[in-house]
Image 1: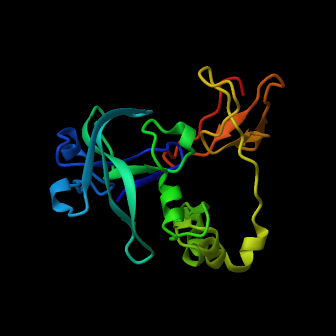
Image 2: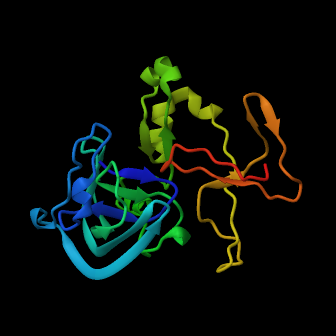
Length: 227
């Protein structure tokens, strides 16, 4: 099991060579499965050592290529470049790896994105995906639309049926950074037009460009202290 993360754009898998990874456990407190490169006949190490920084810590890995599959009954295997994790200072992680679904400019290991490889392998018809997530209050709806991720527009339309016509699309906002003053797509970001807590509307200062990141890699909602 890997984490599908819209808040990053790189792909890594935890391996048997990563000592700290042996202490990682899943949500049921069971040790996570670790990838053993020697057990894969299609694994090819490209040998470049790269370090990547995440909000929860740093990882170091070696670049490689292998055939990946996202659940064998729905998405067949496809070739993907990724990092085989060799060391990290992240003490706790509940899955065997992470696949970033952000934009290419966010990559710290520049390579072809997972969603691009799915499209080029003709597994999906376009680079579209949809998360469907529920909380415990929506048990009846979750029976009709189970939790999960769907790749490709045709699959999403089939999943939603007539409700496809009811979807509202919003623009993704580009960001300017100190290193890149040109507006660029990094995260799945959009303008925050209003917010409220317990029914109380929070005022956004007129001088603030309130842009929010939609990140499936966390369940925490955060607002700027000025709001």
